[in-house]
Image 1 (cartoon, helix red, strand yellow):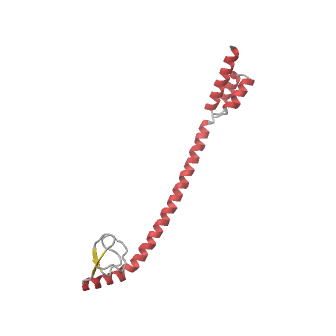
Image 2: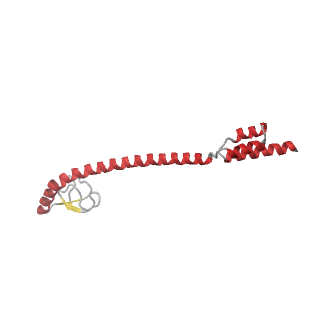
Image 3: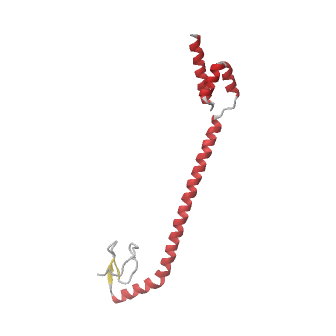
Length: 141
């Protein structure tokens, strides 16, 4: 009966060690060899490692999150640069060419239909004023 109680105390020491961030198997064996009472006292005096482990885990998660944000920012900057290049390209064409073609077509009364939205637009337009789709010159009504 006393052996069962002794083993039960050793298991409790192992359980206590796991809650303090220590190896339950190692501390269970130490309690078997030395004494559960002495082992519990030593464990109580030793520093609790669970707070350090939680802090380390939180720091790792924060680093991963920072990496994800950095990658997302890089993708966003790349997309914004691409959009700015497209806008600059469109600004160069829209101001001079598209307006001239559009006025010419309006004066002649020629129109065509947008393949995307079905809107009636001037025949010389490069982009639909309704939906913004790029138009092909073959479309006509």
